[in-house]
Length: 298
Image (cartoon, rainbow, N blue to C red):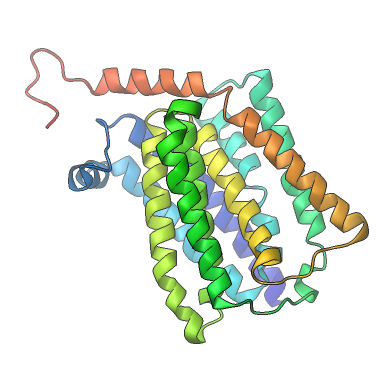
């Protein structure tokens, strides 16, 4: 019974979180330029935006539901429900923003959904295959390397793949730190200390998404983050938490899943970039004060 309740909660969490991404994107794109070098000013702009605060409240509620689901069911089962997030994100983007997707975007969405579905299939029976706890040093090494990878993307990515894509990837890397830490923290005991990395992961991840929203479409930025948030915790379960690797058809499904997700991410990182930049430019023009206005950017 608890498993069924957990799956319902996980679905509500995924739906709420992806609706929040759309809300936050619309609000952040219309704000003056945000900057990590001016955190207080940027925070003030976000907090004063009613639309963004509604979106953030929805995202926070989605996280609480996610944590509740993890407390009731194995990570594999909860993550399999969350895996449908990019499909919901694409649906909400199309319905709410009236955005039309090109062929490459549609191909990226389809490949991503197929990959995440295959990943869910590969998790069949995962709740019965209990892994070991994993060593704390190895877990910390994984989280540290993930943080370093995100830093490298932020430093080198803007010139190679664009600001929006870089922030989406780096945000997803930090969100994966938060997701892995959430599962560890719900085991209680000494692992409750991972609450610290939960805070860091979600705080930095959320910040990077807002920066990405100002230069890219919601599906590009949040879509890439969603892919990494689903794939990396499952990979971490195998590598650092010593969860058994499926064999036979389930193992093949996992290989197909990762191939599709990588291909989908490559496609999603390109077709919407121009649209996102155009949206950002339009929002910036709208936010620019008129000649007679007393409103200015500090």
